[in-house]
Length: 205
Image (cartoon, rainbow, N blue to C red; front, side, top):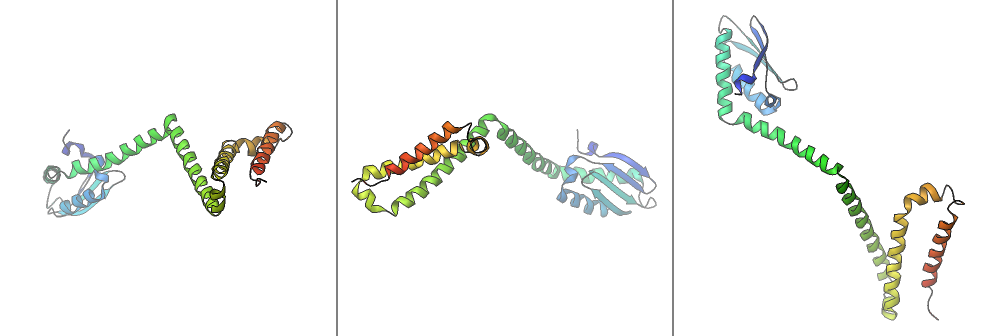
């Protein structure tokens, strides 16, 4: 369908006509171009483009130009803009972002995508925690020099503890803390883990 046929007369009275336009009419630049060109027609004294409703309202003096002559001149202007690629360019610019947005939203809603995002977030947080622990370890360079094996083991123990806490954090806050008796064995495992962690940090005699 040609672009001219997409301008449909919705209202017509003496000296006033209103068209329903295509989707491209909602573009600011195109609407301004149409307004300027139609306003330059002899006999036209009022042009309004309602971009949200995609409507074009024209007021004119029938003594200077009748409806048929106005319609011919209007379609000629539209054809010129279409030949320049203005309508096609605006349509592409409008459709592409919407399509891209829909595809991105569908991709985000995929289970695989959600799983990948969650794992990426967990990995990022683990790396940040490792950086903090590394900085703390660097503050005690003597431990690494005196006993590098123990220093490395302590480092990975800290990483493991942080990972286990993060892995069970939801259950700890929502299940274990509200019902400590029910989850007493889990708490025993937690206390024993911290006992081993503290015990491993004791200097060798």
